[in-house]
Image (tube, rainbow, N blue to C red; front, side, top):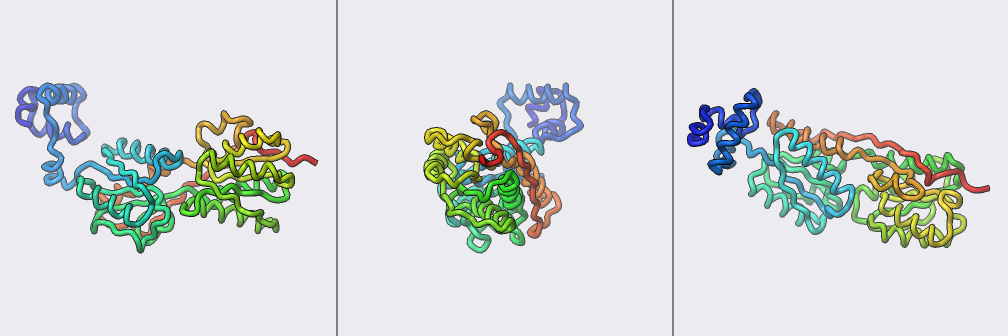
Length: 328
């Protein structure tokens, strides 16, 4: 640090402020210090800085199946929100959502000098099953952890309910559901919303069609729907499954929305470019990521737990061309 200060013509304190991202450093001074760091190959010692300031400036993230759109977009939102606050991130994608895998990932991350932990969709893990390093600030994108860790999540139940109520409002007698996997918490919440809307309208729920979030599973569900002339409306647990279902209906000669109306969930960028453009429930992944980071930093800055905090991010129904009144 002394060498950098001498080369840049500043004090060691100024070098420290630049390396920690502190404000109130003139841009020209900051550029001079950064140039000196590059020329000398200087990198701040994170361990020494943690001893001095009590923080590493790193947030750990545990995810499961980053290939899934919802998972990857939530992680991306957390990373962006952390960067805006001056934090870097370390991501671990666990093989399964089992308690042992998540607990081991948390322990591994805690040994890599993190200030706090964000768990994206604990899925089958329950608060009683999850073992975390003592004293580590944690936030979870899962409402089941309220009372144990602060949680943030989209209004899954209401989103599913709005999708079904929209289809019923168009005049459909009932709504079929292509659901997500058995081991998924969000999938179960969307099933609850689907059933709740049908029960509230006095309609019988058709047999559940089970998928795994992939377009292929939606395609298989679509082949089943295509063989049922009485099926006129389908709510899909996510947009990828809806895309596969649209493919199967097209192959079978079932017109959308003329013969079958389809609604998805997530509003991925591809949704408006499917044919027909997909009516879907929009999740605000950016807002979810921002609130997760805000809750984590509140724990770090206030040095107190926030177990009972549960923030629900509203969803919106985006109406496009894949849903219409049933044919007479």
